[in-house]
Structures are given as structure tokens and as C-alpha cells.
Length: 473
Image (cartoon, rainbow, N blue to C red; front, side, top):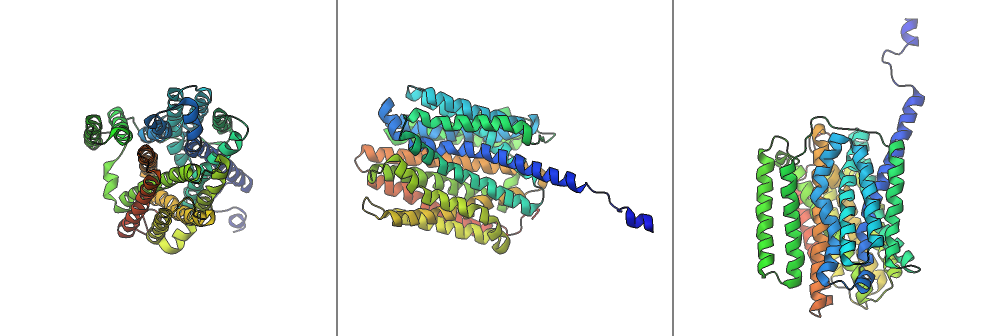
């Protein structure tokens, strides 16, 4: 009996070793979040400096929208395949390579002396962002296996994206006080290099055996997203009734149909269509797409509202944008607690309604509206988005069996990035066309109205289809 008392029946890790593993896991989590930060800084950074870039390089309206949209478009096109490559070659390796490409692309934009140089640099950054995004999420979900801790970690991971969105205009505004727009892009050079150097020391390597690339699906998916964005951007510039726009829309529709057929028949799909038979999973992706569209669209529109309607400086615009970004950052980490108490359905529904209310109120803003009033409307939208995006990510991941978690996370990232891409391209096209027609304020009203209506759609979808207790919760 003494021996049984002195020796535990089940051996476990030594307390010191377990504590060391916990510290190492959180150190790796910080590095991964830093990579996520670098990826999102560029979205609002490029939006903030569009005016000085256009003035310096004399860009046309469509070229300006391409400069603002190409980054998100490339991320959306490659994010699923980049996640698969990480599963095969190692998520840490692909994540670090993506951080390096973010730094390289930002350096190319820093050195650019033409619109083509800016667009190429943004495209290279998009490749890096596509490598960082799904693999950072896979690293997080594989590090935290407990559903509640994983939901909290994913909430923090998503909140970091809001911090990145906030840092973008702030850093740009401060830098532009002393330097040209080129220097703004050195921020991501520093962040990318820092992540590249820290990753081998703090992030644990992981893989998923049995994954294979899907080249036909990759090619057709890239063509579909590229054609859709081309149709939106060029159609907004030249008219949607023009033959090239109609052909681009037709090509995009055909490519989407071909993608579905390829993914349904291939033995190694990069997107398992059967996952969409799970109502919670489908709803979470739709809600994430609509909300991400709205967040990027509202951020894009508000930056131009402050700069062109209120004639604020870039730095003052960045400070005013903190109403939107700060509310999102503050609410996002708290969303997991709200989910535990009230469930996914109520959280996503209420968040979507708050976002819709904020967007619809912003349609009434003018040059004379109080900055405090506009700030409160933006904070309402940001808080709503904070209640939607982290839980939708968690709902998608834990709605499916654990073995499919990486695929689920990659799919939701795809939908979010497609939403963000369309948010910047459609909003940029609407505002560019409105400015050309002399009705910029009316175009701004439309650009903010669309996310508000979309958020109401997301609320209805969440209430009808999302389950409060997905698989694995």
C-alpha cells in the first residue's frame, strides 16, 4: 500500500516541464500573432496613402483601385492552397516564408516609382499574406486542443487583425508627417523580418499527413477570383454594360462552376464540399464573408470620407479611425465569453445587428456631422464586427470533426478574404465612379449602405442556421 501511495498510478509530465511547454506555447502564439499583425497592417496602410500615391504617380482611377485591391485578391486566391502546402511541408516553414515575402513585397513598394511597381509589390505581399494567414490559424488551433481555450485563442488571434488594421493608418499618418509615402511601407519590412527571425526559435513545427496539392482547383480558383475582381473594377470604371465586363463576369461564373466540379470529383480536393452540408459551417462562412466585406468596405469608405469630405489630415484621419478599430479590438477577445454564456446564435445575431445599425447610421454623415457622433456610429459597427468575426471563425472550426479543423479554418479564411477583396474593390469602384460623376457624397452613402444591408442578412442567417453547440464544443 505504501508503494501505491508514493508512486502515482498515472505518470504525468514534471511540473517544471509542463510549465516550460506552456510558456513556449504562448511565446510561439505571440510570434504567430505578430505575423498576423503584419499581414493586416497593409490593408489599411495602403488605403491611407492612396491619395499621396495617386498625386505622386498620377494613377488612373482603375489603377488606384487595383493598387488597393490586388493584395486582398491574391490572398483570397491562394489562401486555401497555401494552407495545404503548410500541412505538407510544415506550417512553421511556410508561415516563416510568408513573413519573408511580406517584407520583400513591402520593400518593392518602398522602392516603386510607378503604379506598376506598387501593384507588383502589393501582389508579392499578397502571396506572403496567403502563406501567413491559414498557417498561423492552423498553428494556433493545433497548439490549443481544448475547445474553450481554442475559442479564446482564436478570439485573440482575430482581434490582432483589428490591431493591425488600426496600426496601418496610425503608422502611415505619423510617418507622412516627416517623410514621403514610400517610407510608410518600411513598417512591414521591419515586422516581416522580425517574424522571420523569431519563428524558428519559438514556433513548433507541425504537419498533417495525407494532404496533397490540388493544382487544377488552385488554377481555376485563382482565375475565378481574378475574373470577378477584374469585372467589378473595370466595369465600375468603363461601365458594366461594356463587352469586356460582361465577358469577365461570364468567365468568372464559368470558372466558379468548374471549380465546384473539380473539387467534387478530385480525390485530393483543397476544399471538401461535403463540409457545406453542415448548416453551422455554411452559415459561419457566409456570415464571415459578409462581415469581412462590411468591415473593409466601411474602413475604406471612412478613410476617404475623413480625407475628402471633411478634409482632415492623414494623421487626424488615422486618429478618428480608432473609433472603429479600437472598438473591434476591445470587443473581439471578449466575444468567446459572450458565446459561452449566450451561445453562437445569439452572439452572431446581435453582433450583425449592431454592425448593421452602425453602417446604416453612417449613411447620414455629412461634412458638418459632429466627429463624436460619427465616432460613436463607427464604434457601434466595430463592436458588432468584433462580436461576429471571432465566433464565426471558432464556429466554423468546431462545427466539423477535429481532423477537418485545418480545412475548415482555411475555408473560412478563404471566405473572409474574398469578402475583404470584394469590400475594397467594390467600394473603391463605387467611390471612384461617384467622384468621376461629381457625386462623391452620394457614392459614399451607397458604399456604406451596402455593408449595413449585408449585416442584416448575416444576422438572419446566423439566427436560422448556426447551432449553439457545434461538434466538439
